[in-house]
Length: 88
Image (tube, rainbow, N blue to C red; front, side):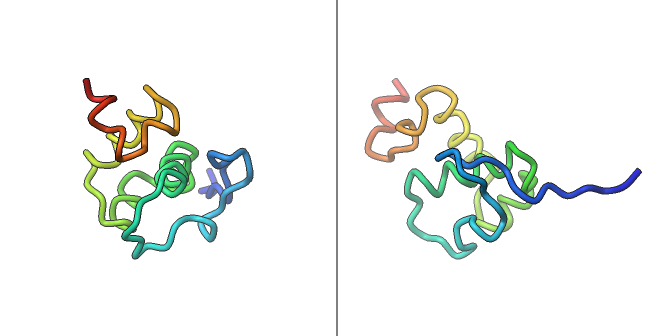
């Protein structure tokens, strides 16, 4: 069985997303789009959860919170100013 690597996934804006399109590993400012791209990359198999956490110095809990926010509230759930509203 060959080890086939995913080369792209569909990003949050509907366009193809490759590893080269992902946010820079030293990203400090996590805007909605960047968070959504990382979640899409992991969900689509472009990166494993472990690879994403290592690449972006995230905790598993932090990544899972992003994923949960998208699942519950769409991209708007990733807006940091709305976190308190959505946690209720």
